[in-house]
Amino acid sequence: MRDRLFRGYCLPDSVYVPVFALFKAKKDSIYALYHDSIGGLLKGDRAKETLAYFDEFYETINKPRDAKSEIMERCINRQ
Image 1 (cartoon, rainbow, N blue to C red):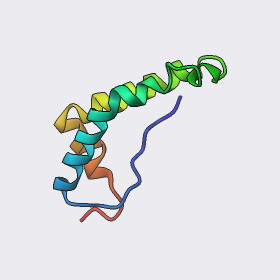
Image 2 (image 1 turned 120 degrees about the vertical axis):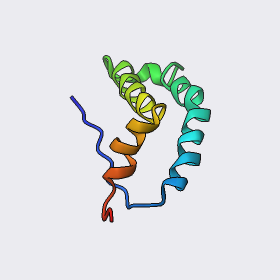
Image 3 (image 1 turned 90 degrees about the vertical axis):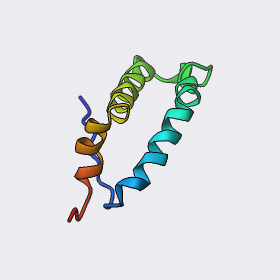
Image 4 (image 1 turned 120 degrees about the horizontal axis):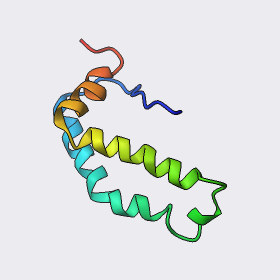
């Protein structure tokens, strides 16, 4: 089991919005890396596990309340 834990420095909330938008825009391209011939070289269920991990990340950033509580408010040196 792998847990996602944000360890970045605190930034204004407005900085996260375009970052989340970029991840959303690139989602298909990111996932495609695990479905191509190179992704097929990963051992066992590694690609499947990685995509499940990404699914959780995308679920988080697609819900503003979750993105705020699980990412934006868990930064280092939060005031």
